[in-house]
Image (cartoon, rainbow over all chains, first blue to last red):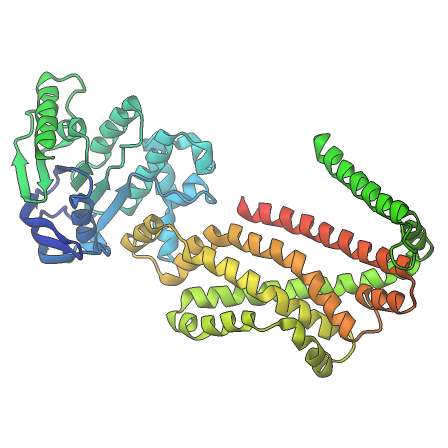
Length: 241
Length: 244
């Protein structure tokens, strides 16, 4: 893996229907987790798609730059709310998807090792339908890690999981994505308070940064300051709407 | 197999036979106009070798038609899905070809390909080509956007996206197309036989009709029906395998 760059997103976005968000600046620190909060439809995922170089169906007036000035799209890995596993392929083949799609020889040994690390060592030969929702997201995490990209874009990857599984996945993701520049798009203030080393709230009128709670991530699920911060974030989201 | 899987079709068959016999008995219609199930069964049994022979001919026409039409349809859908130019050029032609009554082509096919097997195979191919192409193509174009996004961030080759994502995802749609094809293909073959043939169930039906052997005509027709249903069941099984 190449060193994780810092990333600056600066600009405004418009759709055919009008302005999506006013000029904003968002700095993702190298090797840290940035959480982007906001209501649905405010353009959180748009920012993520712009960084990934995907068609965002908006008119973006601005720049997205990496601290090392190298192009970004080939250095990002994407993980979404939907696990995006192929139902016809085994878990192992799903983890090796990137290599298959690039017509490269997949490193099966490394894939198995990663499955072991996400706790799916015994499930490598199963089909995704045989796994639980949490296990499927673990497989998606293993596939993301397999790509070994320095920038990780997470689009509400844990939001469909139950509370317990979600908190476990958050812990696992922080552990395994250490050293990478992570942007987590979420609408869950609790998640942002647990995982954000930087927290930004996106609204149509612009972006506001909120000081994150103290302490290393993942912060405790019952940590008072984290819970208070989650409450304050939620109040803010309610007022914004 | 569950008992109801046998019971209901069996009951439906019995009901149909009862209604049929009821119409024949109450109206007292002449047997050369509408023969009863009994005389049709008798005609079938007496001519079983003849019917079997002609069934084999029609079945081979249908099988070849399904094979060739299926391959051509799938190949067309793949080329349409992988090239924008192909889509713009071929799709209007495909749609227009569907607006033509293909049945009208049967005499010309006979002129071109003769009275033998191939004019009937061609007719079956023409009839099933569009449903197969259209069903598979629709499936190929409905690949979930999330998968395509994932592939793009992974730096995927377009051909690999087609074969590793779009095709496997579209296989159930191809199965739907093949199921339709299994129903249409016998119709195509029989129309071909009506226009000009010396063998096949369609030919036998015409022959029996011309000689006022209505019971034999019905026996041949019901045999064709049973054959089509069996083909449909086979295609349905195949489609379920594709969907897995």
